[in-house]
Amino acid sequence: MSQHGRRRALSVTKYVVLTVVAVVLVIGPFWVVLVNSWKTFGEASRMGLGLPTEWAIVENYVEVFQKASVPDGLRNSLVVTITAIVALILLGAGAAWVFARSTRRLDRAAYYLVVLGIFIPPAVVTTIAMLRTVGLYGGHPGLIVFYIGAFLPLTIFLMTGFVRSIPVELEDAARIDGCGHLGVFVRIILPLLRPIIATSVVLLMILIWNEFFWAFFTLKGTANNTLPLGLYYVQSQALYQTRWNLVFTHIVLVSAPLLFVYVLAQRRIMSGLTGGALKG
Image 1 (cartoon, rainbow, N blue to C red):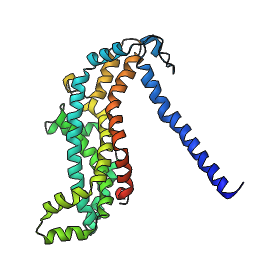
Image 2 (spheres, rainbow, N blue to C red; image 1 turned 90 degrees about the horizontal axis):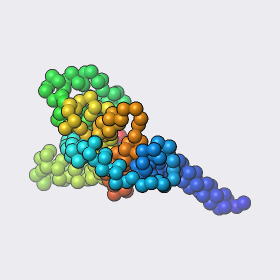
Image 3 (cartoon, one colour; image 1 turned 90 degrees about the vertical axis):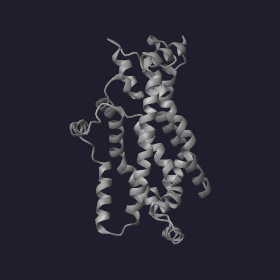
Image 4 (tube, rainbow, N blue to C red; image 1 turned 180 degrees about the vertical axis):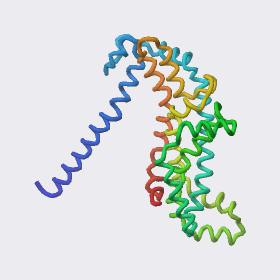
């Protein structure tokens, strides 16, 4: 076989392997969740891959909407997610700009200390105690503040490398034209950060939208429940058996907005990551 033929065979093999991996790890589980959300309780319990013999789409989705309070959960998730992401983008971009442009050793050390927060999980008892002390425990503001603190290191890490790829001469030219620090940040830095901002928004949305653990510990009252918490209360109403048809239906409802956003923004995600986001 010629060298060109070997390269072609290797390329085909790679695509086949990637396709098999995608089917096994992504498409397969997604199909299991989707198809079993259309089935009755008894049929969904068998976790089959085939289409339902008795369709129960309307019944499952109506029951989940009622028991899990999906409209309220959707509203709460949107409030928490959007507010936290807006704050994270503004604070992360500002901090990344400072860290990327500073030449002082103290600032460099502070950057590494902040990034270290990506790998250190927050303590449950300490976090709840602090939220109680400042009067934010039990409601959405406390959860939003926690998400900002928890995911700000990741946001700063993603943006700092991208800021370093922006020529300093653009900022100098803006200052010569009369822009102050805020003007340079708003008119120069933020517009040039759009690729990594889009990437950060999608990643943060995935992390915050699906987050269950901290929402469970920091929110009080079912009226404050986010969408992932609704799944817990649907399951807790089952006394002896897990109603998998309702569980899968709720997973579909929670995942649908994320899937929609990812499909729309996948090109921006890749351009953001390859445009300098991981250079720092």
